[in-house]
Image 1: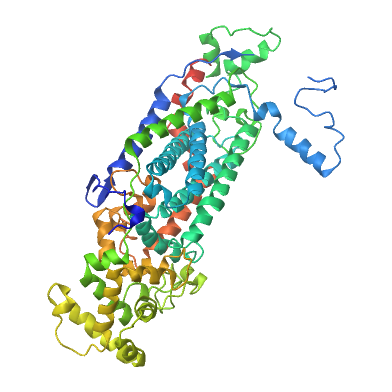
Image 2 (image 1 turned 180 degrees about the vertical axis):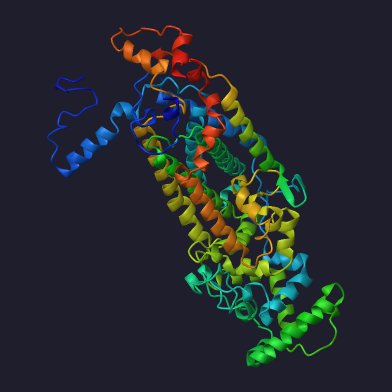
Length: 55
Length: 247
Length: 317
């Protein structure tokens, strides 16, 4: 099935999917979206280290 | 500065007497974007939030995308299938793209809630959205160039959307020759150009001030008073009276 | 005063947002931030790449298809001869099948390019490859000599018989007037199993080739290739546009594009692709021109998340 160019490559696993009622999301995509939301919230709430004031 | 007498740092001596097209262009550029605005050493006091780091995160990711992409491109399309180093470089190309989009999307969300288009910054917003759109197309062509099952299937699926709007002949998802032109030449140039324009516009206009900033804010008032103060002067703690006066 | 300062307008006026900042500043180092960003993101990229890698599911060849699903291969080749496959009825840019294009109202964007990538299914996928064999099947001459009507009758009859046969097995098909079709499709199956069809279909006798349009259309006309994609959750109706094989994140930024295919009126529309692409173009334009859209542009003032962004500033005013 595989040619010489793909000799060293195995088959990728099935993948993990979450979903209900026509809505499906792959685990990798879900993690990326959750990471974005977490970064957004952290950017808003985490205190920013105070820089030096000038002028 | 140098031995030549310059009126002010960052202002060319011939600012007023430029009469050639080139001279006028330089005068316009320096007026729009003097060096200390292009490469600033300070920022307004309100630029103090983690919200401001995501644009730079996206630019850093873009640099890694370009570096890993050059390595992949120079080794040819089959390299990453057969070499473990190639596979790793391919992984860095994929993950720097994922980080690029993560940072860019968070940046976009934050700039929306900051209404960062205010005060003549609409074009900055538009170029930002445009860089997002062009990046999506660029990433899509990258998925088509994997030369594996995923790219095979994406090419088969995507042809319908491309053909439905009449561009499938020139943007043929199954023609690897065309895709190399799109993914390695045209789209990276487009992403680069739009991102550079976006960053230059940010530097030209400066960072948008807080939505509820007012002329009477301490950060503005104190400074006006402080203009005669010696350097190193630190601000006194704000009184509650001045804050109430704003409201 | 406060009201004026919270203007949401994109316009350059004389308000605070339009003027260069004259207030207090803090130290900032652009180059240092860039270098730190490149180092931090570089470490993240190297780390995540080392841990998760990237998937590389091998591509599917015509040889693999013919070996794994011979009945599907023969049924597909028969449809190509009959002109009843998906790609044979696709319209531009592959052929000029009448009424095949996706229109939005009177607008027919699909026809814009014309037939720029012409594909003659029966000839390109079946008879022309067979003619390249060292000893082409004798039935090829019979097919060539047949009238258009005869050819489509033979192929259509064989198509129906294959569908009715147990396991769709070409060996168990009932007797009938199929002309040269069983011999041709059988010869093509052998050719594919031996691996020579892949090369012939891709390069058409040329040394160089970068265009996989024909091979891909033929693969996609069958059931085997789309079945593999469906088993990997890659089909359009499985949000497959977003998905990568395995657990690696894919193009999650295509979520809205992917979502539209799952909902009405797009889901069951015959021109779903055209509708989805045009809808996405409109929505993208709305995002780009958001600063000019009343209501939408006021959301940041009505839901004041900005008070969190600038909490230090507001605290000290």
